[in-house]
Amino acid sequence: MTHPTHHLPAYAAGHLTADDAAAVTAHLAGCPACATQARAWHRTATAVQDDTARVAPPAPDLFTAIRRRLTTTPNPSGARPVPPYVPTYRGNLGTRPLHRALGILTRQRTLIRWPVWTLAAALIAGGAILAALAPTGHAAQILAMTVPLAAALAVAGTCGTDNDPPAELAATLPTPPRVVLLARLTLVLTATVTAGLLATLALSALTSGGGAAGLVTAWFGPLVPLSATSFALSVLYRPSAGVTTALALWLARALSTTGQTPATGLSPAVLRLVDPLWTPGPAVLTAAAALVAATLLLSPRLPRSRHTGHIWR
Image (cartoon, rainbow, N blue to C red; front, top):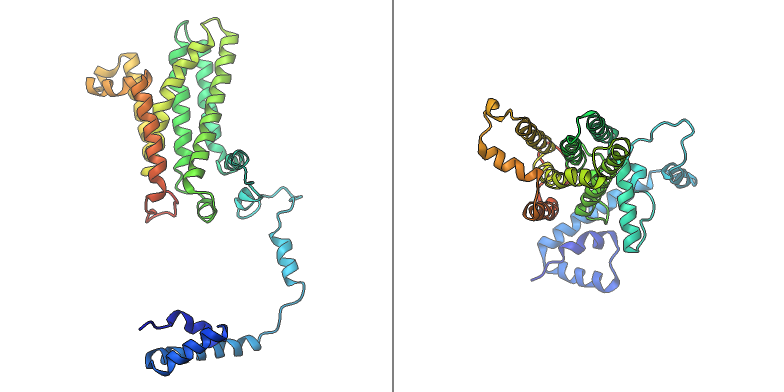
């Protein structure tokens, strides 16, 4: 026997069609259990109707006032709206794939905190200045140490943020979480690479230490695996793991290039692991791309953290 349990609330409230109501009435006549539930729902509906009847109707302009408050308007005082992420996803992203992708990408800009951009810009600018002041032939080595580190730290600070105010809002939108995550990664790497290119071009114009192409190759190669590693650890585990690993790999490379590894106790095995990241071949670059793809695939499937509301952990 099929019991119309899911119809009983609507039956008690009088919202069923005539045919459905007649079928439920016939069933209640021969089913004491459902009849008991129906009486309980009827008492609930009666109580709600009685309480509602005693409440004064809202003012006619109430909903107009609510709509006015919900509409984002320019703030003459310049104060930041609360919560700060409400206008972020405001507006129609469009239906055309390219237009929608650009809309999602540009909206990530307002979600990335200014310390991330400041740190990345400071590292790249500092590296360019050191490269300009360094002896001839060392510029590429300095840029190869600073630009990839800036990218890796920026990725960890944005793609794996624990305290992410728009995370719950993004979870309720039609845009899948992995698309939002990919948009952030794309935006951060695009901004970092652009800053690195500008610093490289400025360095090439101000010095006579070599062509810009060789300098770009020196830092773009290690940027890919270092950023991929930071991205995977930050998203799949926690941002501190991505930051710590990036700094550890950077320190190991710095010590190996200065010849300080024996004094620090770093084994040759560590060097064999670190060196390919700074001189990546096709295998390392392919592995980095696969790591990013796997992270994007797994990120929405991970359970939420018990300590934070992070959408991707």
